[in-house]
Amino acid sequence: MPASQAMTEIIILHLKKGVIIEDEVSTTGVDTGPAKQAFIQSMSTVKAQPGFIRQFWVTGCWESWEHNAAFVNSQEHISLMTGMDQVFDLEVAAPLTTYIHFTDDPSAAFIAPVTEIAFFTLPHSDREAAKPIIENDPISSTHPVITVGKSQGGATGWVSDTKNPGNAVRDGESIALLGVFGYSSVDDHVKWRQTPEHAQLLEDMGKTPFGQLALGEPTLPGGNTFIPDSSIFHVEFHAGM
Image 1 (cartoon, rainbow, N blue to C red):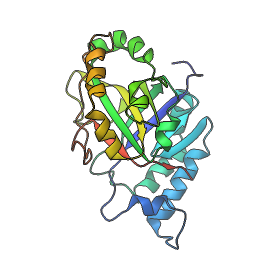
Image 2 (cartoon, rainbow, N blue to C red):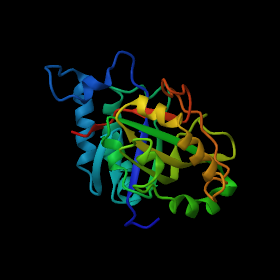
Image 3 (cartoon, rainbow, N blue to C red):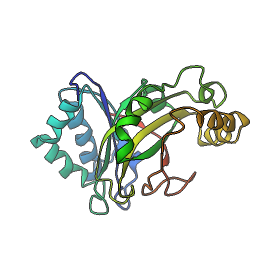
Image 4 (cartoon, rainbow, N blue to C red):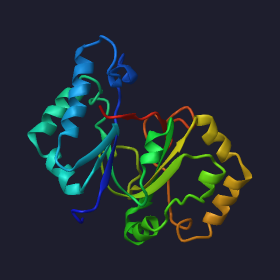
C-alpha cells in the first residue's frame, strides 16, 4: 500500500449505558466528569499523531496507512483505548474499524447535518477484480443523488481492510465498499429513495460493471431508525475538538 495514499478510518462503537454522546462531544457546559474528560483527551491524542489530517467523531483521515499503523502500535494508542473505556462499552463488542480509500473527497458528506453511511460486502474471491471498478466510479456534481436527491456531497471508496467484523459479514465475504452521502435531513434521504429517478439510477447501474458486482450487505449492530440492523446508518458527525 503506497505511503502517499490518503486513508479514512471509520469506527463503530457501542456507547456505555447512560452516556449521551452529544454531551461528551460538546465543549460547553460545566460537566467535567470522567467520561467527558476521557472523551476530550482521546480526541486530542488522535489529533496530535503524525500523519493525521482531520477528525469527525468517530472518523479519522490519515495521510497514509503507515501513519495510522504506527499510531495503533504505539503507547499512545494503548492510553487511548483505556480512556475510551470510560465512554464506550468495549465488552459488548470490539470496535468495528474500516479503512477506506475514497475516490472523491468525502468532506462535504461528513460536514452535512446528516450523513448516510452505507457498507457493502464482496466474496473474497471477487475482491481483486472489483477493486479497480470501485475505484473508478466517482460521484460527480451531475450525479442524480446530487441534482435530484439533494445530497450535499457524496463519495464512495474501496475498503482495504476491516478489523473486528464479528458477525457483521458472512463466511467467505468481507466489507469492500463504503459510501457516504450528506443530506439536510433523514427525510431528504428517504424522499430521494422514493423518486422515479432513484429507481432509474438503480436500473441503469445494474447494466454497468459496477452494478454487476456481487455486492452484499453486512448486518451491522444497531443500524438506525431507517433500516434497523442494516448496512445503512444515519450519523450526525461532530468535528474533532
